[in-house]
Length: 373
Image (cartoon, rainbow, N blue to C red; front, side, top):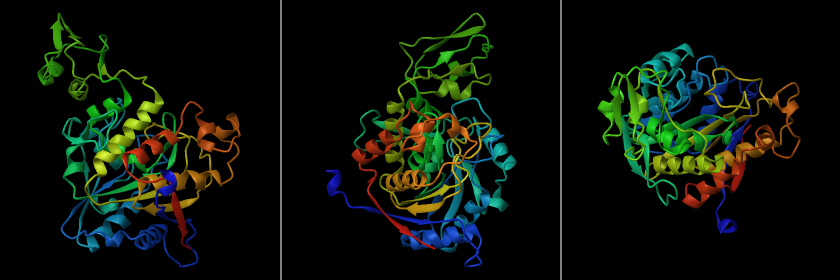
């Protein structure tokens, strides 16, 4: 079956800019024009630019100038662009819209620097979501996606390609799948769906009980208790707890996480125009969700674009593996096999995400790489 798949086109260029006297953001625009982004009908269309603003303390995230160049192009084509990401499940600096926007501003993102407004996709507390059918879903019949993401007419992903401690790589499929999930959606991907309570943090305020539609929370003295037989795993209690006393049960297999993330990406992208851009620079071993980033494990390679997020991720991995590893990095303590991401995190298998995405019909991992000077 895979041999019969038509190759997707992936366009690539390096970060050299002296030959044409253009800036790197301008070169990105030239690349995505060559890749065919202008064939999309942007006129009067709300266009979500999905990107990661970086956790507070992290320095590996993409610069806002890339978003600005993309937003200006979309606006010139008659579209209404906005930057978006959904709140995090963990208790970091982006778990609600206020902290998320504050972190984005701290990292340089605002309406002026990014060229458009920023909307947090799943609302103030991470529970403004839409249940979207998963096409051919195996693990999830529906996906809980941020409402603003689904309200958009077109979705463009702007991805910092990197390593990831749970999925092997953080590419376009993860940016869309995990990144567009509401807090409850992220819990569904990451865990078995049943929250646990830290009694030491709980102050018995009752907010979680007010938001539980299944009667699974009761107040016992000054502490809440969870009836897991009644709990539906919706994640609403996690999103409203002011003390982070409720958290998901972590620990399901990495493969299940990979495949659920692919299913969420398929739910987000089905039935509407989409386009994907990845930057292979500051390639850190771990996700930008960390409040720090380690030394890049590879030199800056370039940027790539495609209508197919699966092919884009496959090409990005190959480009990384063709590039010599940097010394004095995380990789000095790892294996020396053919795949840098397998070596960086031996308990992960990034191929599971792409293999499942292919089975879902999200895209193909067979590609033609077209290089632009």
